[in-house]
Image 1 (cartoon, rainbow, N blue to C red):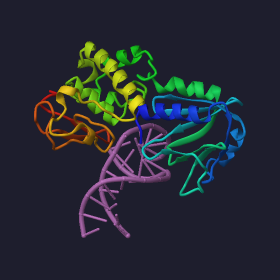
Image 2 (spheres, rainbow, N blue to C red):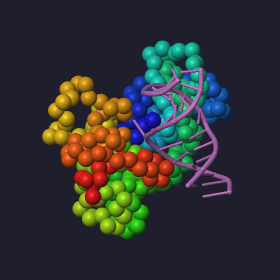
Image 3 (cartoon, helix red, strand yellow):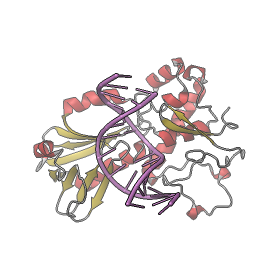
Length: 266
DNA sequence: CCTCTATGGCGAA
DNA sequence: TCGCCCTAGAGGC
């Protein structure tokens, strides 16, 4: 259940474990069997990420496109375990096995098809893509900035946690229409997303709390919310804001839970 | 054991 | 806006 930083980590991991090797590809579950047959035995060249999309490239110009959605998961093993549960896709060498369960998307595509898909995904802060077009669209839009931040054509790889946290860190109200956002705030938030998400790629967790706001009562080693890091507002509804002490609020926005501090983010 | 929830996104209505 | 995809952990009984 990843945001973009996790997918970038997985791309690096798959490249490290399988890159430039002949890989056996199969689908114990069966749903990917026909496609797996098209790449099994070929050399896996490199895995790359754009936003939350993963592309696993093979020497025969085919790619496996994976999107984990809410439930998808990769598991890596140093042996080949007997398949347990529904495994959509396996990558197997003599020394390593990767198992993919529950992805939203898992499909074969040519490099030409991959290229078309990439044009639809939008700029990724981790990849260092230019936010110019996103900036123009956001600053013209009547849609709430909290909704725009979840639009993968504008902010590829940003998910519900980074959305809530970047808005808090810049004290921006989630319901503010994009066109009422001061342009300097767009630039500051994009730059901040780059920092936060690249840190997430390194550490594998989402940490957004500045040192001066860290709650004193908690030992550093003991801190870590359920998502694996320490945050200001995500899933902290009903608890005290680290900055002002107000109660963190939660509301539904476009079917997703939104968290913010009504005092800090007026 | 059961129910609820989730870091996502698609397509139908 | 809703249902669905489809998995696993948390929490209640």
